[in-house]
Image 1 (cartoon, rainbow, N blue to C red):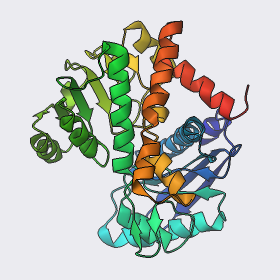
Image 2 (cartoon, protein in one colour; image 1 turned 90 degrees about the vertical axis):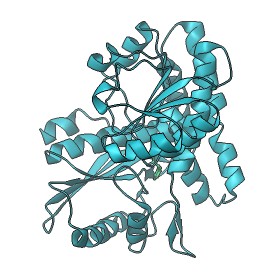
Image 3 (tube, helix red, strand yellow; image 1 turned 45 degrees about the vertical axis):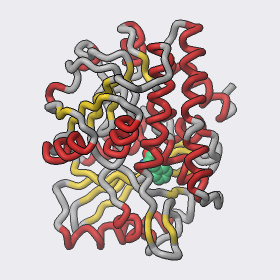
Length: 348
Ligand code: PHE
């Protein structure tokens, strides 16, 4: 299984380590370093099998290669996955993250990381005390910056661009957006969209969280099982990947798929399926690049918040250009995004 996954992957290397104390497997996918050191977040999650964690590390690090290339920041694609066999106890978490920090440090900067699904700003501070190769940390105050609001801002301007391409108008007022996952990105995204007059439908596996966010934005809760078949203008996947697949595409009642999740499509052909059904897809690694943009620029010494948000908002015109190119060629926007990545990586 593991041999097969790595054999079929076109990346550079996978750093693998087993933690005997917790039984966790760590996989650091280093996909491509054409543009710079491999950088991407660290995901901490319970997986049924370690190979599922490896598969995530491989796919997600490839997504980061595309993301850095698409947002024009000189890093390569990397991703850390700490695959847990079971939930951690509160006493186990900090020492495990310290050991992970020392592993990252041992790579001497060829892999650098930050917050992702399942890790928190507190976790990043713990890791950063072990290694300098952590993004989004203010070492003066030992606080970590949450990438969520930056990612949300990028998805927000990207959604506006998608609405313009699909419906012609520039306004989100009255448009219905179904947010799947009211977490670190989903919640601030819901607030931005509500502020622009959109009608929110909110879903989360955690019913309490869905209810709290829906109430805060005057929206409606949608049961997790009903997400795909619920009519809406925009379906915004903001949680795990592969929610857009042949099964769910057949059910979708939306005009647009635009959200923050990484690897939204189960397989590349799903982009064609969406296109055939007349659903406009905002390529995930383009629309969700706001956090990466902010962290990349912070590492380059840009620390003015307005400047960071201004750069994040370039995701809007970037997607606008991709949607226009896709429309003129009657193809999915993924092809325009892919050409952008290939050009940036000098693949012709
Ligand atoms: N995890 C986020 C992403 O996938 C933000 C991030 C980028 C975190 C780069 C660390 C480093 O884009």
